[in-house]
Amino acid sequence: MTISTCQAHPSLSRRTLLRAAGLAAIGGVAACNSVSLPTGEGAGVSSNATTTLSTIRTSAGLPALVPDAQLEQAALQQAGYMASRARMSHTTGWGKDFASRMKGNGVQGAAGENIAEGRFDQQKLFDIWIHSDGHRRNMLDPDFSRFGLAYVRDGRDPSLRYWALVLGK
Image 1 (cartoon, helix red, strand yellow):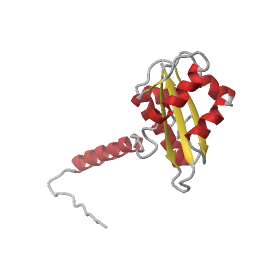
Image 2 (tube, rainbow, N blue to C red; image 1 turned 90 degrees about the horizontal axis):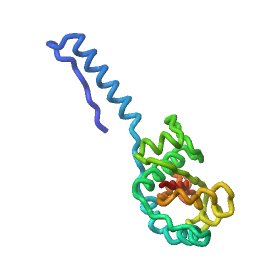
Image 3 (cartoon, helix red, strand yellow; image 1 turned 135 degrees about the vertical axis):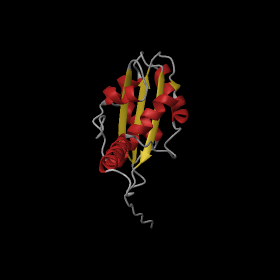
Image 4 (cartoon, rainbow, N blue to C red; image 1 turned 90 degrees about the vertical axis):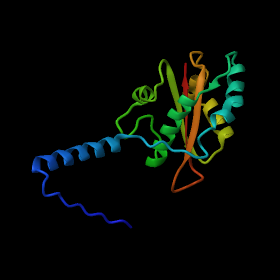
């Protein structure tokens, strides 16, 4: 444990100290707004999903989707948010809806997102999504050419995963 003490230097004016305290507070608020992106086994799963998504798309006469690191980063961010809050949502507690999250991740153009929570592997995940009209529609949207898939395990229950699939042009 580290304990630090701080003493004001006698030659510093009260105004200087208040200015420094204000800047430190602003820096603290800015740090609170930064997003710490999770890493780990759930990162990099896009390449594992390429074949599954290709099969889904080509069976509908559509071109395959290409894994994209930028979209995977956006998916990883959302999966991490959901895992940290232990709930599924397309919006975050940071006040960001899907569109603002995509913009914040540098994703431009049309985009879509599928999310899931459960104790299942990737194959079961796609089986669930393909049998859900809205999720299937996203995966078969002809406007999309790229995707990113990620999951983050729940910290209290490691068998529970929060999944996010982000699709884009």
